[in-house]
Structure formats: C-alpha cells, structure tokens
Amino acid sequence: MGSKTDIAFGLFNGGFNCAQSVIGPFCSVEDGEAQLALRLASGFGGGMRSGEVCGAVTGAVMVIGSREGQCRADDLAAKRKCSELTSKFMEEYAKRRGTVLCRELLGYDVRDLEAAAKFAGNKGEVCEDAIRTAVLLLEEMGIE
Image (cartoon, rainbow, N blue to C red; front, side):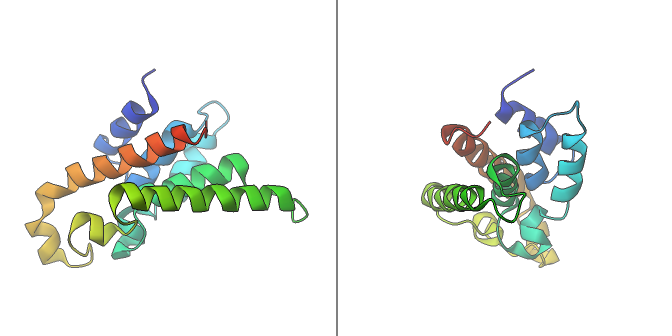
C-alpha cells in the first residue's frame, strides 16, 4: 500500500472528487468506514458544487471529525479538541494555498459551465495541489 497522498491521487484519478480523495486514505476498508465516508463526501466536491469551501478542505475537516469529533452531547472535551484542530487546519491551509474557496483556487466559478470548459485543463493540477496540501497537513497535525 502506498502513501496516503498516493492513495488520494489514485482515488481522484479514478473518478472521485476532492473531498472523497482526501477522506478515503484515512478510512478503514475492513469495517465499512471507507464506503460510508466516500458516500458522505460525495456531495462536497466542487465546493459543494457551488464553488464554496474546497472539497479537499471539507474532506480534511471530515477526517478531523471522524478521529477527534464529539459523538456524545456531554463530551465537551472532544467538541473543543475538534474545534481547535479544525480551526488550526483551516488557518494553515489558507496560509499555504491563499484561500479555502474552490472558485478562488480554480480561478473560475464551477457553476459557470462556459468558464469551466475554458479552464478545464487547470482543474487536474489545481485539485491535485489542493488534495496534496490537505493530506500532508493532516499528517503534519498527527491525524492518522
């Protein structure tokens, strides 16, 4: 098995969106976690198909939540830790990439089909950079 980045690129080049490509390498295949995560992340590509927060970013936030998130209402420590890690991730991602918005990373609004066709060649490179940044940042933060 390759690195998480290699797995993420395999998912992306295999037809999954940026959110799915980031969350996939952090999931266990044995217990069905990966299948559920891929389904949950399927609507988050293209900034939720509206050019908003990049799918690689939302996928990473899902990873943080799946590892450190609150699953009981009274678990305020987990809620606080997840919030802190999410804020740290968002800040660092924005520093490295200049923005967390899909349309700003791509240079066009994904809802504008004419612009999307015009800039189609940029998408693969931009998305791979977005995915790489998200996966590496999660690893740097100690998220497994």
